Amino acid sequence: MQKTFATQAELLISASIINHPTLCSLDDTEALLEWSKIESLLSSIYASKTGRPSYPLLTLFRRLLLGVWYRLSDVQLAQCLYQDLLFRKFCHLELGGDVPEASTIGRFRTRLVEHNLLSRLS
Image (cartoon, rainbow, N blue to C red; front, top):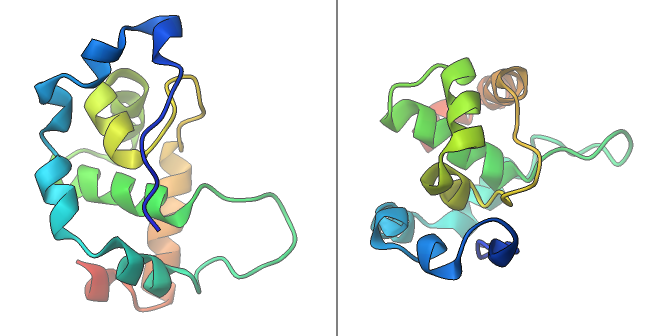
């Protein structure tokens, strides 16, 4: 299920900046992918009912895609997510919200491999 990028833009930047064409450059790419199918494949990764809740699986997967597309290490990508509105928008991360750290995406990638999903999703 795809969620829209929403934030309290007026607190930090104007709504016109959030809707600037530059921040829509990944929208066409996003429209090509069948997110509901990807989400159903990912649903088996974190099946535990206990423990701290993880980031949404699609957010982690989107982050993984950005790293591949832009040839960024996990550390570089974490830094970009703190700074880049385009990346935050694509990953559906709020402006003032937390950003998945490099170790989080590393563990997510490991889980994809353990569940034989990395090759199916790439």
